[in-house]
Length: 51
Figure: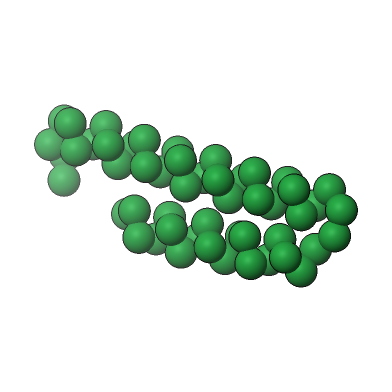
């Protein structure tokens, strides 16, 4: 779960390098928020021993 989130975040950051202007910033912010959200979900599942 964490690894797939890392891969998707990395792809979004790489795509952001190919865009210009505000789209670049938006893609980076989305990438960071996505990775952070998945990490928080994973941590909560670990606390509840769902994995």
